[in-house]
Image (tube, rainbow, N blue to C red; front, top):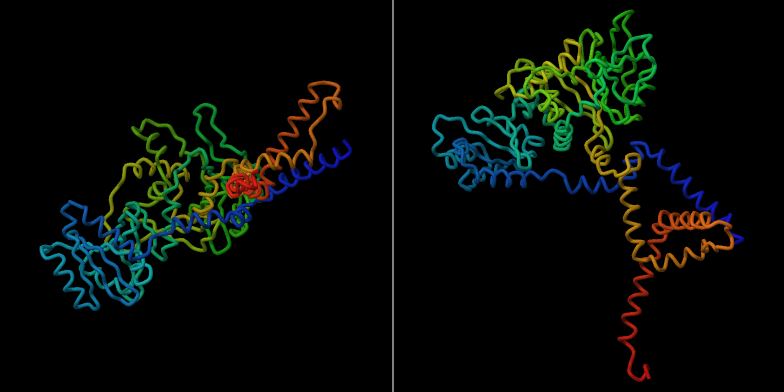
Length: 497
């Protein structure tokens, strides 16, 4: 046929265009294209303050523990009015401090000398914290978030209160905004994937590249710490795509200071390192050390020692467990989030040296991980951490992908068009026969060549033309079906005759 070369060129052009677009889908452009992720976030947005108050009140009514008798659900409106509810379902609204005190007396008549617990909605703490601060003198504070309750510590003065929610005994989250708290929870509840954590030792004169997977010690099977020349760190991070890079150093402004085992101290641009991690889609974690001494030995996150339950605990651990092990009962860590975006989240963990009202305890996984963290950093003394991670929305987008390197929105759009195209298949197939006429046996001397050509033609139709023509073929096919059903019913007997 005369137009066969032109059609083959057209199909080849479509395939090359698709191949060119896929690698160009960087994390930033992928997030811009993935509007479905925005809809997902809207559908899973945190409940409003009054909704959280109602959920807490309903949960409180179902509680049977003795502590429920001293607990109130509370919400502060934008006008400064208090809504209170107890476990019996009784409610009270207070417009001033005198009425608020009266509400406590009415809703908790049998509290006696015990201290009350007030579970507040997120809006009350995030937006109207100054109104909440006075009751912390007579009651313990907590945050009601969806179907959970978090103990809350208050630091700072009444005019500038700072609220901290306890997620783990040694880990607290600064309550600065609802979006920030939701992002912090999403980050901290991510599973701790040991095989994706790469501990880096920055040594001048070291290797200039990093392997795409951890290097294992031949005798023990443990992952070793990767050594890299700091001058090539930003380039080498590209090899750790979708992994977590752990570095020990000291961040001073835009300077990431390092102290190698030999030679003078080195300094890198912290912004350049973050940009490289963002481009490579790498989670970056820096253990802040006053000395900036580089770790040595093995990545002990992979250790296998005779500790009962160690392997099980690590397999079920989360990022919160890891950070909890970084802290201690005397120097707990406070996480704050700055500059969140659709693709990246910057985290800062500082040691809390102020007295708080939250009781501390030790968890089993925290005990298991405490030794692991010490070995991970080479027993380096640290004073917190700073991280630049993929945002939770970006992480959800990656999890929804069927093909790892193609944005999920493009994949699901393609699948939707294919399904829609099935509806108009008879019509689009007729169109396809005009665009690419069927092969004739006379054109091929061997049967194998004929069947190969037919297979290529069918594959091109199913993979490209069927979804591309779906928006036109499906509606026209529906119109055609409707005509076949409606026209016979509208014909009169005379017209049939």
